[in-house]
Length: 161
Figure 1: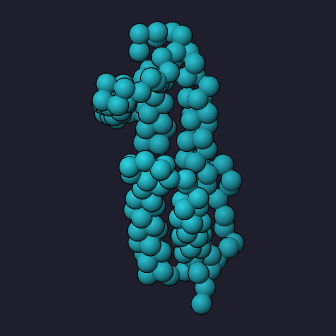
Figure 2: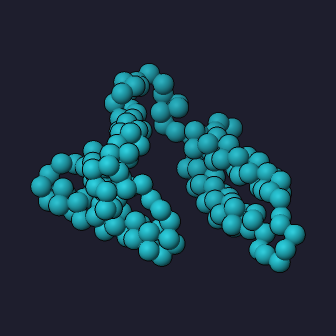
């Protein structure tokens, strides 16, 4: 039986989830009446493991890849990994710009550029991507700043945000 790449990736992800679950028992619990610090990581691991199991079932049902059966034609490296490279390059630029732009402005710019790089640069899409970037990053920034009282990087250019 020949496995497709998705099946192998799903099995590796399930193994990583198992290692993380085992490591969650290494988190020390305080001796006063409080919820265990391992509770949230375990809750997230349960959801992540469920998603990985769904991924495994879906990949097994799909069967072997057609490209695995015929390895003659392969896309060039950059064309094949274009979206992944865009994500990493733009995220690196976001991290490097955070001391200057801060979390809010840098995050909005990052989401806007990434959506345009992956989805297209037409005027209608750019307006939609701008709205998505402002609403999503503004909402996250507001949640962390006002709801959770977390101090986020403000940046040197936009000191008030």
